[in-house]
Image (cartoon, rainbow, N blue to C red; front, side, top):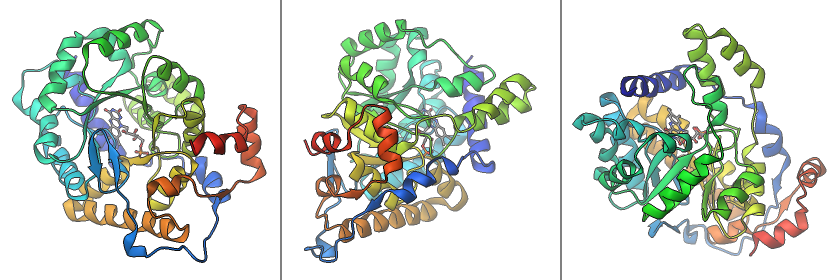
Length: 372
Ligand SMILES: Cc1cc2nc3c(=O)[nH]c(=O)nc-3n(C[C@H](O)[C@H](O)[C@H](O)COP(=O)(O)O)c2cc1C
């Protein structure tokens, strides 16, 4: 089991670096049809724009997070070290990949592939990670121990039914009994739990369900970026699982586009902390999702690709460009800080208002909820 987990994680990186596993058309309409209202007199000095936010007890320099990517293999120590260096340099949050391999091992290298993140990223939040359906297969105390080793500030629990469905060896038991396990964990754990998807988005119903259990942080990981269905299609084809590959291709762009998922999440849990991720790969998209109701933005694939192809320098350049784009939108909308950006007006096309209305979301009421 351990070797299978480790090899899969390694194979995933290989595929996402080499192959096209993105469905770009999913969100391009939404991003091009919602417009910011330009402010010809921003009423602020560009140099005074404040990007900082408070998250998990830290003051971040920008409202950004590198979401959970990896850990669990000797060869990814360097990757996590570089990602952590970038998080530390730019004062942004960082998550590790699923810690399942850490629970099943005594190997110091495997453990180090996670703990290196905390060693390097000392002054930013570090988030642990586990899949929800792993909870029923482990001793919850071993998870707490793994989080302690990482000195994690929060635990991200990922929901990934679409990925597991197409994954040749996928675990497709997402029964309600898992919620009892989650409650058990919540009684044991003394750090916050965050619920995240991995690229198919969170609906208002799912956010309501977990918020009802006491979860206050949601990373929507919507369907505009890395497609885990597409990744698993590659693996299914390679391992001769033709039916799974075919099903994955049929499901193609399955999922809730990120900006709509942000709105659904905020609608369902108005006071919660919402992270916009899933194809939020530039500062403009981050700004738009924040104006739609997210507190911060997250990304995985582009920073992974940047550091693998160009090391620390390329990763740094990526973040700097991202921050410049975000700052440009803040300037041109007259936003002194992230809180102000969250309340800037937007032009919303009728087509999107109709989609929201089909889900019972009245835009004007939403604006009231969003502004708190
Ligand atoms: C190589 C790779 C491995 C990942 N592994 C995990 C994981 O172990 N746990 C998790 O919650 N998300 C994992 N993710 C998902 C990301 O955290 C993120 O939700 C998803 O990729 C969507 O963001 P993006 O479009 O910016 O890549 C992984 C992403 C990548 C690229």
